[in-house]
Length: 236
Length: 301
Ligand SMILES: Nc1ncnc2c1ncn2[C@@H]1O[C@H](COP(=O)(O)OP(=O)(O)OP(=O)(O)O)[C@@H](O)[C@H]1O
Ligand SMILES: [Mg+2]
Image 1 (cartoon, each protein chain N blue to C red):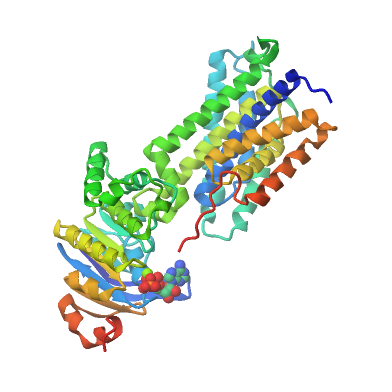
Image 2: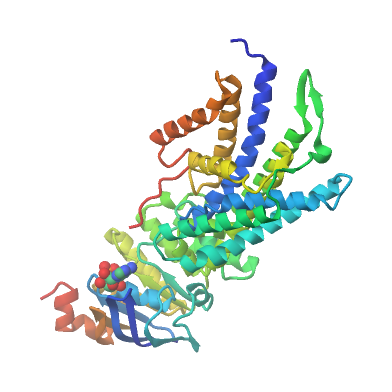
C-alpha cells in the first residue's frame, strides 16, 4: 500500500535529515514510528506527503510513484497527513475547517454526508460548528485536525504526534479514536512520543534514530524489547 | 468657523468616492500579502494600465461611449489588468519564491519601471478621459449630488460586496482564506496553492484595473505615471485597515479617503490633508500595530 525505499532527505545543502530510510505500511495495518526529538519523524512524513522532495529513493503509494509529486496531488490520491501541532486554520470556523478537509472530494452531497459523519464521530465538533478554530481547546483542535483529515476519505492516514500536549484522559480518547478509524478499514502510520500507548494499538513499529531506521518489528515484540524499553518507554 | 451642511456633505461624498478607489486598489495589496506575505509594489501599475487601457478603448466609441460601451471598457480593463497581474506573478515573482525578502521587492521595482516606460513610449502625455454619460447632478432635498461620484461609489461597493461573497461563501474563496492562514496545511488538504496564489493575483489585478477606469472617469485624464500617488495611498489604506485583511482594506480605503477630503475641506491649508491622513495612520498604528482589523497572528508553534 505504501512503500518507502532508501529515501535520503536534506534541508539545504548542509543538513541531512534522513539517511536511506525504508518503511512499509500494508493494507489494514497501524504502523507506529517512534524516535527521539529531532530523529527525523516529521521529516519522513513530510517527504511521504510531498511537502519535501527526497534527494534519492523511492516512495510508492497504491502503485503511484509519489516522491517528487506536489503535496496537493499526493493528497488527492487519498494519502492524508495530519501535521504536527494540529495546524487548524485559526480564523476559519470548525465547519469551514472541515470543509477544507474535503477539498478533494468532488461531490457536494458526499461532502455533506461526510460532515455529518464526522460530527457524529466527534460530538464536540458538531456542537461547535460555528466557532472559530483558534478558540478551541488543544484537545478539541486535535479532534478537529483528525476530523478534517477524515473528511478527505483517506486511504492511508498519517498522524504526527496526535497526543502531544494533551491531558491523559484526552490522550486516551485520541488513541481510541485512532483504533476506531483503523477498525473501520483505514491503514494508519502513526508518529508518537507516547511510545507505550502507540505500540499498544499498533501492529508493527519502527524505531528511528538520527535519520536512520535502527529497529523494526511487531509492536508486541518492541514493547518487550530491552533496548526499546530503556530508550523509549522509560523503563530500565 | 461656519461650516454649512452642504459643504460637509460634499466633502463626505468626495471622501467616499476617493475612498472607494483607494479601497479597490488596497484590496490587491492586501490579498497578495495575505497569500504570499509579500508586498506587490508593482500593483499600482496594474491600476495605471487599467486606466490607460480603458482610455485606449474609448477610441472605439468616437461619439462617446454608451452604457454598453462602459461595461465593455470595465470588463476589458479588469480582465486585462488581471491577466497582467498573472503574468507579473509568473515572470517577476514566482521564479524568486524562497529567496530573501528583498529580492522580490527589487523585482517589483524593476517591473514597475518597465511597465511605466512601455506606456510612456506609447503615450507620454496627459490623456483626456471624458466622464462620458455619467456627468451632471441630481438633487436630494437641497443637496447637489454628482452622478459621476454616485456611479463610482456604487461600482466600488458592488465589486467589494461580490468579492466578500466570493471569499466567504464559495469553496475557492474559502480555499484562498485557508492558504492565507496556513499555506502548507492548505496544500496538505489537496488545495493547489500555486493556483490559488495565481487566482489572488488575478482578482487583485482586476480590482486595480477597475479602480483605474474609475479614477480616469473621476479626474478626466490618465497618464503613464498616474499610479504612484494612489498606489501609496492605497498601500497606506491596507496598512491602516490591517495588511492581509480584506475587510480591513475596504475600511482603510474609505477611512483614508474621508480623512483626506475632510482634511482638504477644513484644514487651514488644503495641502495639509496628506499630513493629516498620515498622522492618523501613525496614531492608529501606535495603538493597534496590526491595523484596525488586522489579526495579530499567533506565532506557529
Ligand atoms: N526546516 C528545517 N530546516 C532545517 N533543518 C530542519 C528543518 N526541519 C527539521 N530540520 C532538522 O531535521 C532533523 C529532523 O527533524 P524532524 O522535525 O523531522 O524531527 P522529529 O523526529 O519530528 O522531532 P520531534 O519529535 O521533535 O518532532 C532535525 O535535526 C532538525 O533540526
Ligand atoms: Mg516532529
